[in-house]
Image (cartoon, rainbow, N blue to C red; front, side, top):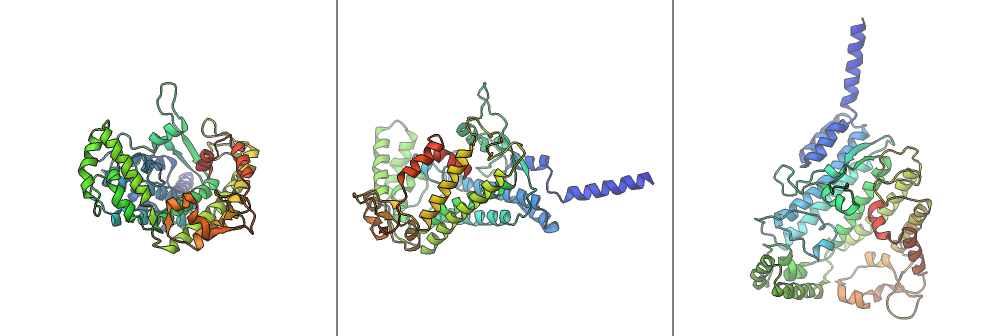
Length: 418
């Protein structure tokens, strides 16, 4: 009967294997291959058969996040995003997408639709991750090898790896200048981290959609997309295309500066969807709450296995990424201060005048919105409806202290640890 016992054990083991999510090897192959839509569908089917398997759910949510980035990049590739200085500094447009020799025509409605789709994808990802209940989840990913099919041709070409960006940003190259492997074991704490990033990116997208940017589009879109359809500014298309064909042209520099100034002057944005600002505000509050949960889970970890966000007892994933007890405490101080600002319990220091007790109620900016005028915000006039002096103003010294705790690079650490 030994053979029967062995057979039963083999069947049981096989059954377990079918319901513990994909093997690490197959999951690694999926993220290397890119083009995540088919794999997402397969994981959804697996989850329907085993709805309690949170490791499958973690794999699915991770692929949905990668798909969100990939689909966004594919949109910019289709439209021929020129990756100029202005767009390279905008959230959701900073992707190293290769140049498209034959871009599609794009108008403002289609451009706006990209952000609508990003929101839908992020909402699906966050919903998947929010349903994870188990603390015993983990997936391994070599971030250098994650494939991003930016051009949508069904394969991963040269320059279409997430690691192309990470290697440059994180300094992950060996002495020969070649990319090193960067295998990270994402665990329960990283579920909260990834959910927090979903809410952060959703906040940016909702804020964008709250306002009508069509006037800015008409002035500047041709510097971003070769075949942008604009109203009343078609005279610039030929000279802009000629400028990109001759990068050293003084004429090109002159026109790009003039049009950039015109775009800034055009940033008088009518309020289009005020409810989107309410949602943006809620996303930011959710991000704060999830960051607290992430750090609670991180600080409870006793292992040290290729962590993405390490606690002070764990090794950092990259050089210079050490986290100290003081930094953890400083981050919680930041979360408290930022939440107080979002909820209107403290005021943002006003940048005009000598009354140090006067500040901006950030909550009112989201809950009592008005048309947006960039120049008037810089000058201060647009802030007047939101100014108060009956609530404590956030002390600038607090922010200086937090920045010092993070070795003068608070923004860099914030982008990483969320």
